[in-house]
Image (tube, one colour):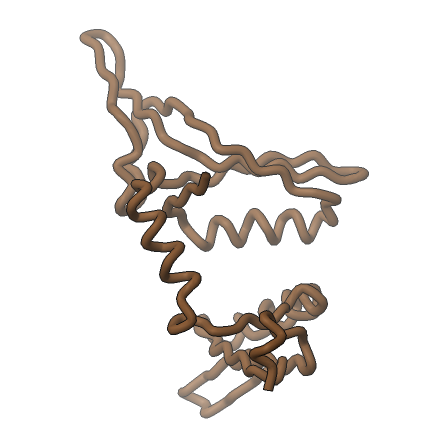
Length: 171
């Protein structure tokens, strides 16, 4: 009942930022296939679909997409995100076991209550550096830092007393 695939994180971020900026009431997601004439090769690891050619026509490639529809009071925006073909069920099972493994992450810090402030902070931090260090602490603190090594600058933001999941992991 689960599906996994690869896609460009930057494009996904752009979709979410567009929905947030335009104050969408909801974001609808649909998995779709599109036929693209003379399409460039799919993203790394994608092997997206069969190429179809005939004697008198150009090459067409079938590629999978995630189609996002943002809806709001004054907004109806559709954006498509190219993705790889779905991973095999054995690969999906392996990903699930890694995600659920306590050796990877024995706890999660719920950032939903501060997501608007976090979005603004990350936008500001990205102006300082392309790399942002994220630290999540079992007591419910979340730290985000950007470094500019040439000038020896460090700028950060901290959120405290966030919910820790599962609660038994809180220090």
